[in-house]
Image (cartoon, rainbow, N blue to C red):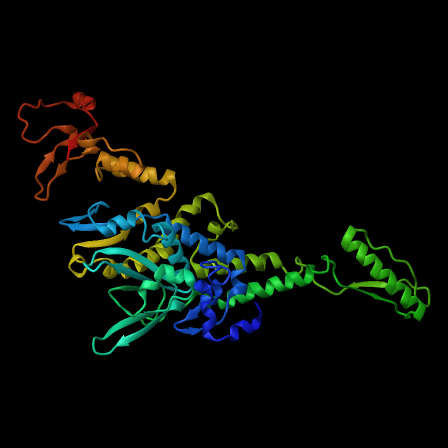
Length: 454
């Protein structure tokens, strides 16, 4: 793709998803980058860089592997709704449409959000209002207008290509804001997004220029440019012979690694002086500058360098803080953007006060298996969850009513909200007049842990 691609009209941004042969490929994803509805130009050259694609892949993968659930509010908290009890819960546990499972839907949505900073999701329902499917739509296929009388947004969908017709051809005709979710990751006015490529253009251009510099150095077999100077000059015959020898030796050096062997003298018999005319990668500190530029790209995407295998300055001791900051600052905003936009579209108006959609952020924070097991064990041992809940979070089968118990240390006293003692230290229940008083020796034999039925 040439530099003139940046000057193409906005219709060029429809390349992603518009081709019947290459639907949903990332090769033309750069054409989607824009600020609002004004195309800012192609970034396909940037997307050819492995570091950018890796950042997109890391974010998409981490969002998709974090489960999302439908919750029902109750006094003092919320409970997960079973897939058999609500169509939205069923969808979140299986497929969003006949074409996409939940994880693939989330990967595609995240790829759009971290690059173009926006994505549309249309909801299809039966005549009775029951939810049938949701389908993601790339933003070039959607135009937004305002209905003045109702003061509401109306989304007009144009399904470009046969694949688009199959997936969301039913969404044409104009959808209201309770049928179309406009997910935005970065915006200044709540409707027009700001693309990552716009804010990171300087870093991307720097890497492109550095790559060009590297290609220029090594496109001639990695040979530096040399100058041979003869203080007293050369005769025409000497010049012709030396030029011919140089070309032959340079070809052997490129193809077979044969070193240069030149002989000859100038007019006065003086040997030539060799001067290097180019700079090497070491001379220009290319590796340092390259790592700095790659780290800069990671910073704009919000991905820690070690997630894309840039391990400079990363130690085992500081990986965990990096991971937690990554979840808090990068993944959680994506979680919230998706759920807040989908909430009024997937749930009927009379359900929105009772139900809500939320990602399991605890699982995102404890993505490492060892760390996750430690967190669950701590929750179980401190009485925050039942044994069945601990087994379920670890991926094991629950054990029925016998597992509806809490575990806590007998060295503490449990009280209710009125400060009345429910359980004394050592496991003695309050009001147990038959309980024998124990001395210090007996206390040492008392059980340290107790089980209390839920």
